[in-house]
Length: 290
Length: 233
Image (tube, rainbow over all chains, first blue to last red; front, side, top):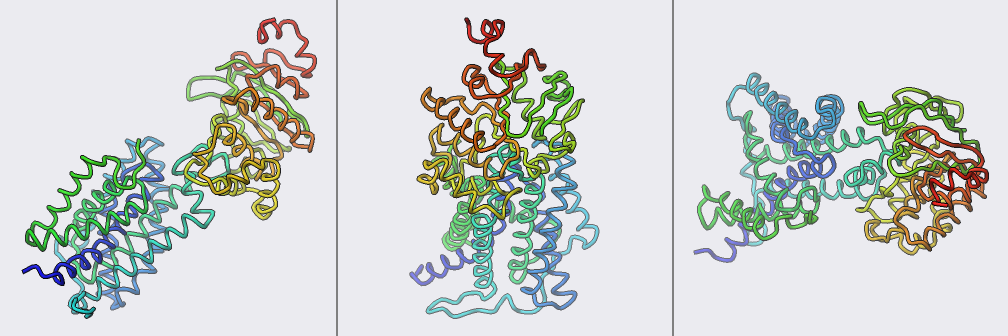
């Protein structure tokens, strides 16, 4: 009944979904790794980005993938501004306050979206979601293949930025040694805001990749952030490679869980894995030991 | 070059520096000495903009810097090598040094890197290694090297000999004297009174956040009160 080709197809589908999960997790882990805060507004910002994709694509008739570059830039600026002029000043340098500010922000955004778009669930019109590509014996969804490719590309770009540019090096420096960074002339507030902006840009890209096969309503981001949070803990808090591999792993586990336990129980597999990792490797797969 | 007038600073309500004045001229080594807790590190953090100035003035190269941000102060060439090194443990030696020129002297990065490597051949050997894996002495070299990448007009060294073996302490003071011989102005903040007075031109002895004694280092070294208080003689 479970022929190898069915299992292989489930694994590949899991990898494809996992790459987009990884992208959402990447934004979360980057902000945690550098600012040392959990951004509770991550889900609400993802919802915003998904609505923006929907509006540009369905409202203005733009190709969904063409909405990604401008939205990524817009969300980079939006995230920069939020951290620099709202979250940063409102939290007065106290991490506890930051949690509350981001939580408050998420409530405000969610309710703003609810007021503007009501609770309706919307999808992109057109039948792109059913577009498949034949790969050997497997039938794969084209939007998911594109999603995988773009997510990997974004991860590589982000890695190149962090490893090869002065701004990226400054981000890594601030992550581990704030005072040393200040004394090297790095403006820590700017780097915090830039990191938050990059996290939001990841969300904008993820939104563009999700919308062809998913729906949007004012609360949709939360489901993804729960999974993304699992990925971040699984991969090791603040670890970029951890978020990538954790994302792929979670995608595969969800997909195989769905195959063996039935679609509705697919996500149960994620949390079984999560509990196992917490029991056996509490710092996560790539996390530094405390 | 650096002039501090009646400086008051500290943490919130707690005053640590209480009316301190000091001057550093170009090309000098000025030592700021004193026991633990007299405010030496607070002074450094205030000079480099990490702590706000409560009252008084700080002038550097003719401009007032007491409201400037840390990165503006770095841009002016006042470079602070902090106590405890504060290097970037998750990055390799070369990247640490490169970040020294993040804000200042960036166009001359390659040449300055070569210069730092020739002063500290050990850092060249370890260029690709994570800074967190270096020994204490190597980390101190890296911290100073990172400071020099910014072509400092004035280099503040906060406890450079702290935690080093006696042999390395000797080396460290020889190195500071050598940098100064090449024209580098240095504000040396130390607990190690004897060796600091040995290489400094002028010295300030801090007590309770204010200057208790100051003058040419050679004179202070011969001062009986100082010898009793700090050298146990």
